[in-house]
Length: 287
Image 1 (cartoon, rainbow, N blue to C red):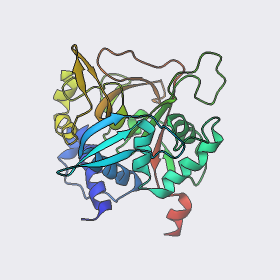
Image 2: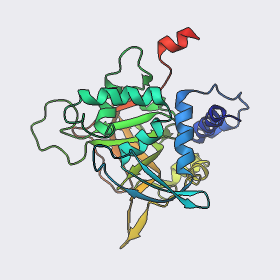
Image 3: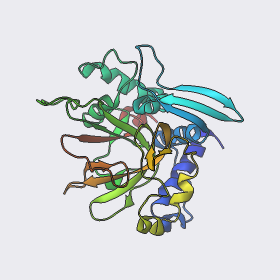
Image 4: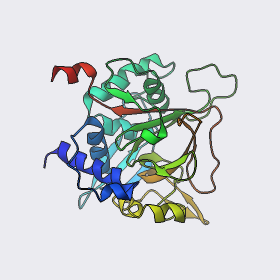
């Protein structure tokens, strides 16, 4: 089975996670796409992480992610959220270069070694015809292989009079369909690099786990080596799987997020955008 077929199969498996009835259907293997390829390469690396650390970019020529062999097929991965996404997206050169080329249009970002979360968000929010990404406007339409990003106040490319947030935002690769969690809310399983603990298969609401029995198995595909417990509090440090709870507005667009149980629901001054890696229209037409 070639790489594209493997990633398509992974996308099909993950797509069935949120809706168990779909997994019972004997459907034909979906046609490989850039999005399923991204889900595949991201999942492949995440599945062999043996050690990890959350590290911001240090200098102009620093790599998006540092990946070092540990032996026995395991790797150490050091990256921040945008470095992790960029490292994997580079396996799709056309798509990565499109985001990277847009980077210089975002004030203060041209000298950064790779696109940061706010660059991804602004790029997806302003996609032009022919871009190698498709915008995903509604949470209900998000699928594995989509890149979801948000910007924090002061980093959204719009006038802001307050003090800018310390981070530009967050970006991740989605690995599931939306998992319903009440009216206007849904979880997404993601692979990201973070210093904040997420919902895990152990901390999701029992009703969500009962309605979606495949979630724990899907989560277990990826070693959760980033989470540690200190004085009863869970913290994260690096790459791993997690679930994030998203809320929507009246049109179904994402307007809030919550990293973990008991965490604040964040929405004020935050803008979201989702991009799906795709073949440019001109390329598709030429085939």
